Image (cartoon, rainbow, N blue to C red; front, top):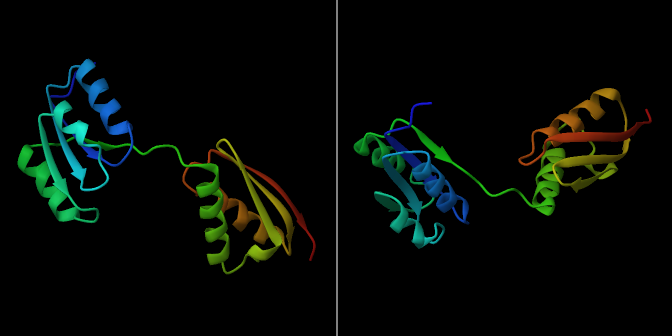
Length: 151
């Protein structure tokens, strides 16, 4: 396996950007450039990378410019695992946005990376749409569909 010469890290909050920088160094990456977010990214990352550019969340043009100017062609971002409560909330929001799904009749539970759907729907199409919405939520690896079709 060939080591990267330069790696760009899109550094959000939490410990993961620092862990990624450490792992990249161990893997032989020669130069690490970080795009860091003011009031989000851990300041300690600055001591672990070769260059760091601080910006506000949403400054996409600045992020792209930072990497382009540094010659970065490989970039990665890593996010902490989503909490079960945030996954459940994301699924419930997605269900409310689905025109063909009556979200009031569906209860969502999240355990680990599995979403479980309970309740009543009017059709198989509604059950499929609910399952698809749950499967698309960040942090969901599988969906257990316990929905009962009652036309």
